[in-house]
Length: 133
Image 1 (cartoon, rainbow, N blue to C red):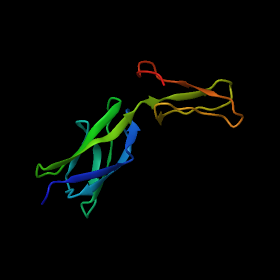
Image 2 (cartoon, rainbow, N blue to C red; image 1 turned 180 degrees about the horizontal axis):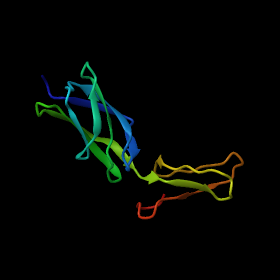
Image 3 (cartoon, one colour; image 1 turned 120 degrees about the vertical axis):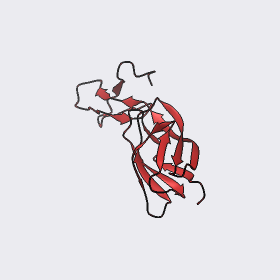
């Protein structure tokens, strides 16, 4: 059988904390295949019966763009270069006035929230989580 070929990742962005459910599309995926995001193993890999897709859960990883590698049990592999972006995890969005908005976790670099009243919200990142937006 030919080596696996990775065509796309859906979604192609997820939280650097990990846990993003991902579909990998391509061909020649075999049962027992493993998936790596930037060299870190994904979990829960399940290959579709036709070998043209698989689902898995992205691991935690440092922020940035990484290659996604699918390796079949026979040792053959396919790589999608720059296939996935690990975005910083935003832990809280707190309105600048006490107005009851609170988002616990959201993957995204520059998140802005606007209340229906058009009051601007401010972004707070977890201490030590990297640069601000």
